Image 1 (spheres, one colour):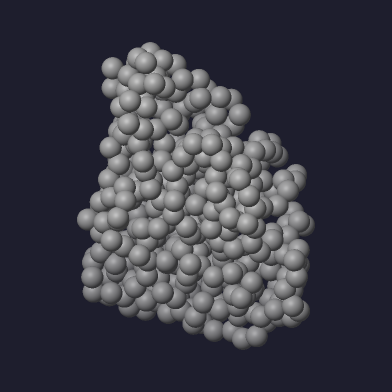
Image 2 (cartoon, one colour):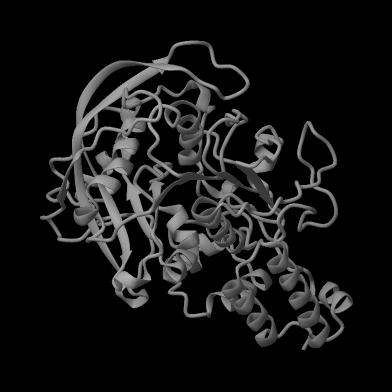
Length: 458
């Protein structure tokens, strides 16, 4: 996009190399199911699920229902049995077991006929010290349009601990009083068991909907956890039919014998921080999409996304934010520079769509060109501030949000002498991205409409 931001941020340093993570497996033989926990509907307290980093509107507005269940069982902790190698093919052994009770939040279509048969299970992100669903926040329009069920799992201890807070924006001390977590060494098996519970207890968890496919997703720190899960846990317990690894850290390889589709989605920030070390060749079961001009998290996710009901107005808001970026996207964040407004969520929507077709129908997603850089040791991106190649489309966290330097009126005038020229160029780029498979039809139409309604070139 011609007024898109340059990403200057780097990924969160606390998301350490996944190779050092302790493992949690179910102890089952290869290809086996995970243990299935006891599932009970969540009740008590304020009567509603609490997810601090989530959309803020009533889900009934989009035809969805939010519910919550408690999952109780015994989880295993596992450790590596051999040194970590450079092919991602990890081996692990059970070390101990411990009881747990966690929760899962469910977003499902009210109209049963809208369900497309696929459940996406998000490893809720806890980088902010409490549960957040960044992939739901960024991708909910596509998930709703296509009729997915979304399930957010509190897999890590810090998320459960925050739920016991008396601060109503972070938790509900009464509702979540009985939750217990033995520690993050057990998080992998807890996540496996949550996925297994969806298969075994669909009437309770999904309100009677019958899942055909279950896809695991996670962003940032959770993406790093998923890489470890794919390499060490998935070969032992085949719970998930595919994986979307979004903004992973580090360069630990993903094994080449996973047997189910894996799509890795990297913003320009992620590539910059990792210096391209996470890159692997595309295969029949692996795709890497790198998206130019985007950041680890952005203005849409912080400001527009929480209120976006999919009514078609968000594309205009995104375009307006490109022209008038701010360093104060919400009451909780004030950064030194205007944060990135390059909209990664449009390409993420396409990733959800393409991955589901891959899992359900065997239709492999398109190959995305890698971001072009001027060197390998440090990612200094070529061409203008919008980056080149890839899929075109006051807080300690500010460096994750990149920055935006909009074109001046003179620069815009030189590029687009009039409104018609701007709309023509915008529509051409949009149609190209859609034809290549990096935009879905609904988003492309909204983007084209936003350009027509804009004042650029007038």
